[in-house]
Image (cartoon, rainbow, N blue to C red):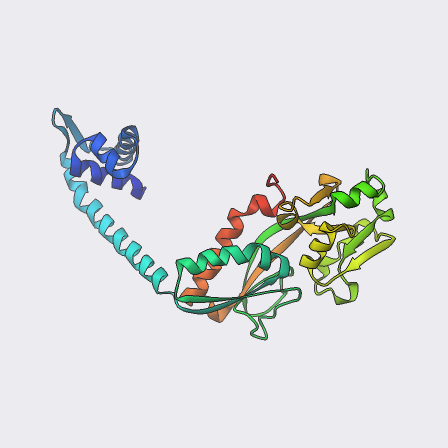
Length: 299
């Protein structure tokens, strides 16, 4: 049974008119009528009689009233307990994440989370390397690779897209790029191969290595800035590059890379309130950011 329908039933039983119930619930009066009809259909019983003075309960309605009030009381208790838990979260949570996602996505998201929970402290490790749960470097880790084993809670956080980007200034002074074949003659900005911390970062292997790599860095943020300054073409996360007016997407959807972020937490932490709240918040924010992460947001 839909609890919302019972809320409408309770309000109408208390105030007696559709318009007054609608004002209290913040909806249109037709919504109240529709909800009551749905409840009556479900219970196969008429709950109200309509008279000159408004709506009054039938015998079936009077029978339902104490049960609905008991549900309202139970729901209110649950809601107050949840709010109390939210307000009382305290302690520290350390989150490890890839540099780009940590700096460009989690920084602002976690600022919101700390405002919701002023007694909670968050450490954010946004670094261009693996953060290891097994070494207790963090409580929650967002990583590019799913571990094959370990005493962890593991979930797929989100996919994200990377594309080719270059500055307008670079594209104006270099040969036109019409297809992937043209890329070999261009300068690239990329990672330092022997310092890559994940096989998921070997993007250039998928399009064929260019003849010239102008600048290498272990930092995706440094690559981004070098590309925006005209050093060459880079493979960058769309959630970072699409928001930068200095950059243009090269070859559009012709060349795109999809990668996955995995979220991990040691099993022994899963029932700790602050860990559960942080874990759920990170999942909700990733779900709400799908357009940005998948490169579908307009500039």
